[in-house]
Image 1 (cartoon, rainbow over the protein chains, first blue to last red):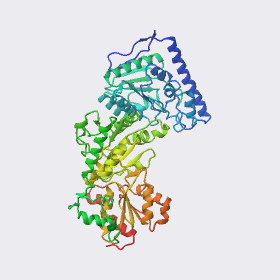
Image 2: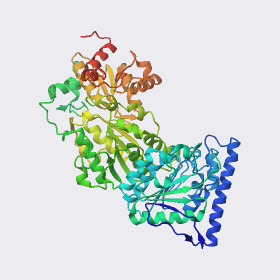
Image 3: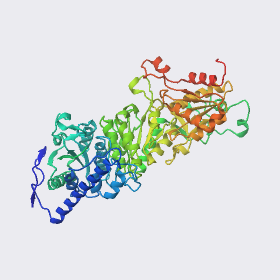
Image 4: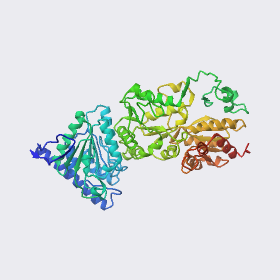
Length: 257
Length: 378
C-alpha cells in the first residue's frame, strides 16, 4: 500500500482514497510508460534543435505522471481530448513512438501521414491534439454529450492548461456540461505557465480546481502518479454515477516551451 | 404569392419553345398571369410550400430517419424557432432530439462539433450567421480542417444552418452576407437555397453529407411559397451539392446568383423579356464547391455575364466568379466585361431608403443588363 499526496476539495464532501494498492507489475508499467514519454520528448527536443521538426513542438517533459496516472484508470473506450502539448497523451492512447516521431518529422509514415504535425495527432477515442487554446474544451463537452446521447457508460476526459482556464468558451462548456449532466472530467493541467506567462500574471484566481464554480473540483499533486491515479478513479466513479461533470486540477511542471 | 417555376418544370412543347419571338420566360408569364393568380394546373406540380415549411419538413424527416441526427440552437425547441423554422419539432421529437442552448455560440457550436466528431450528426442552428462569428473558430478550425489534419481519421458530419444576409431594418451588425467568408475555406461545403425545392433538397443533402456543411438561408424567403414537384415531397428528395441550376434558360446574358437574389434575377429577366432580351438565370445553389462547369457553359453560350449577391464588393462571390471565367475557356467568349452587383461597401444602414440603396434591386439588375448589352436606357 502506498499513500497518496493530500488533495484539496471544492464542493465535495469527501475525496479520493488516501492509500492505494499498487502491484509491482503496475509500478513497473507506470515507470516504463513515464520514462518512454520522457525519452520520446527528449528525442523530439533534439530533433527540433536540429530543425528536423518545424513549426511548433510543445514537450510533455515533466508532466508524465498526469497522462500515465490517468490512463491507469481509463480504458480505450473512454475518449480523451487535449490541447497542443499532446505527445505524451498520443503515446498513452496507443500511438507508437515511431509514428509520433515520424509525424513530427513530416513523414508519410507519421500517424497523420505528415499532414497534422505536432499539434494534430489522433487515434481511436483520442481527439487530438488541438492548436487553438481552449477550443478543445467545448469539443470535449460535445464528445461527452454524444456518449450520454447514446447511453454509453463512458466518461470523456477533456484536458486544458492554466492559460486556457481563462478562456470564455471554457466557462460556456462548464455551463452546458453542468446544465445537461454531461459525463465529462475536465482536467486543468496547471504547469504554472500559460505560454510564457506565469499564472499569477494571467489569472485573478489561480485556484483552478474551484473555477468550475458549480462543478465540484479536486486539486491533485500531479507529480505523483499514484495520487493522479486515485483522483482519476474518484472522478470516473463520480461521472458514471450520474452526478454530472467534475473538474480536476493537476498541478504539475514542464521543462520546456 | 406564387413564383413561377423555371421552364424546365413547365410542360412547354417543342414547337412553342422554338418560336423566334417568344422567350421561355414570356411563355411562363402568359400562362401564369402577372402574380400567379390564374395557375394552369399541371399534374407535375404536387402542391405549394413555403421555404420555412420546406426546411421544417426536411429536418423532421431527417431526424425521424436517422437516430443520430438532432437539432440544437437558441430558441429552437420550446419557442419553436426564432423564425419558427423548427415549429412543432420539439413537441414531436422531445428534449433529446431538439435542444435549446444558452446564448453561447462559441460553446454550443464547439459542443456540436465535438458531438459530430464522436459520431452524431448535429444540425447546429445560428439564429443568424452574424452570430456565427462568435463561433467561427469552431466552424473553421474545429470542423472544416479536422478531416484533413487527421489524414482522414476524424469525420465531422455537422450542418451549420440559419439566416444569412440582410433582413428588414436590422441594421449593421445583423445584416452581413457570409457567403464569401465561408466559401473561401477548404474542408467546408457551402450551400445557399433560393426556393422551397432548393431548401428541402439541399438541407437534406447537407444532413446526409459526412462533411461539415454551411447552409446559408435568408429570413426574407422563409414566408415565400413556391410550387414544388411531386419528387420534392419524397422523403429521399436530395439535390446534389455542387450543382447549379438554370432557372430560366436564355441566349443573351447570364445572370448568376444565389439565395434570395435569384428571385430578383427572375423578376429582372421577366421585365427584360418584354424588350426581347433573354436572360439566362443561373441559380448557383452551392457556393462551395462552385459549379464552374455550369458557369463556364452559360457564359460561353451568352457571351455576357452579371453576378448578383449581397456580399460587399471586395473579395465577394462575384470576384471569385470573375476570376474563374478569366481562367477558363469562357474568357474568349466574352463580348463585355463581367459586372458584379453587390451590397454597397458600407455597414448596412438602418433607414429603409438607405438599406434599399445598399442592396441590388430589380431595377438595378435591369439597368446593368441593358448597359452590358449596350442598349439605351429606357
